[in-house]
Length: 117
Image (cartoon, rainbow, N blue to C red; front, side, top):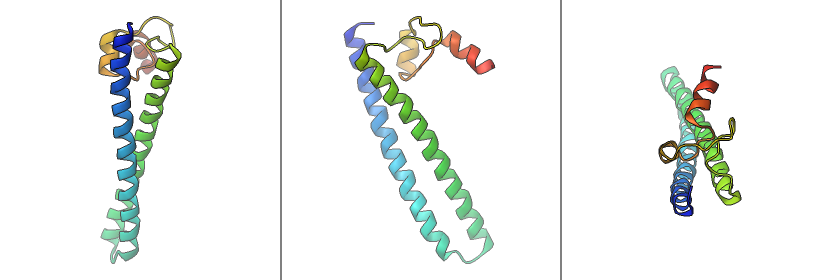
């Protein structure tokens, strides 16, 4: 893969990183808001809704943190000159796959095999 493509994909990864950081911050703010409201809850329906909201925000935050880690790993690979290589078979990951999911760790074939396990 040429340097221009790597630069383009790095820019995409940096935008995703910024977006995920903002989403994590927003989820944490929403979670604090839910905690504050829970203290004021009057009935069991309010309490149940607050518990659901809290679990939802926690789950979203965790998924965003996992994605953020993958994005940061991809950026590190670009910086180290190891980006675009499948972690399983060590062949190049297709440019189409990297454009669709720039934080891919495996080629489509190896990813399919891993998902079946």
